[in-house]
Amino acid sequence: MGPMVTVDNNKFRDEIEDIEAEEKKICEKCNKNKIPERFYNSHIKYCENCYKEEKERLFQKEIIIQGEPQIDKITEKLYLGNNQAAKNKEILKKYKITNILVVGFFLHEYFPEDFKYKTIEISDNENENLFYYFMPCFDFIDRSEKCFVHCRAGVSRSSSVVISYLMLSEKMTFENAKNFVKDKRSVIEPNKGFESQLKDFENVLIMCQYKYRLVKEYFNSFGKKK
Image 1 (cartoon, helix red, strand yellow):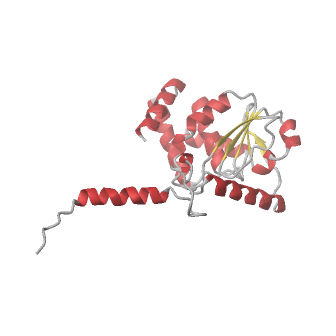
Image 2 (cartoon, one colour):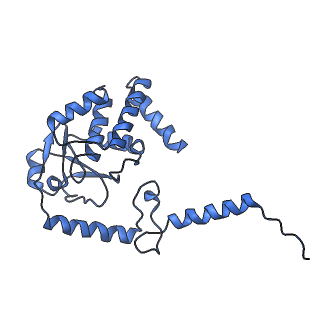
Image 3 (cartoon, one colour):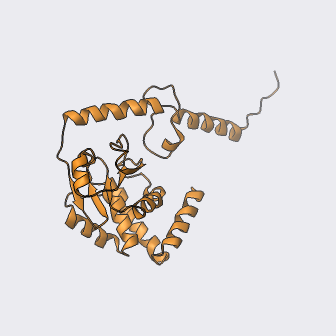
């Protein structure tokens, strides 16, 4: 009888978890290339090449399935709408838009020579963590003269950003901010996960006494913890 082999179960388990973690970083479309680091916390599992291909495919699909451009004035500096409006330079110029905040995956910055852009890649998924994206969005809006915020439909993702910004800048409760935006753009409907996070954000604002500096410090520490 040969010598007894001792198996370190903890080490074995760790090795299996490491292998599974690496597998999760592989593109689900080509099953070959690694996904970019910026997608690790999202529900998009494409490598850079497959992401670009999918983005172009959806762009061509939208050309065929045209919707009406929609842009609604929320405040003097803040506008909310859909991706069709983002493609329409005439409408953007009509509203004297200076900055465009794109909230979503597979969306284009159509006129980079005419407007200042920032793209925040968020999926319309109830488990998406909005807290990671609040401060970059707020900073961009604050630096804008007139900012147009849009996702694909202007219903869930972009409306959640606009609502959160008003909660901070105007010291509004979640319900008041949502109702205020809904009065201006009736189709808005943040998904249930986003609504829950916006209610949590109201508690953060109360804790920070609606002071921008304290809110920023909170989210900086939140990011580090994560």
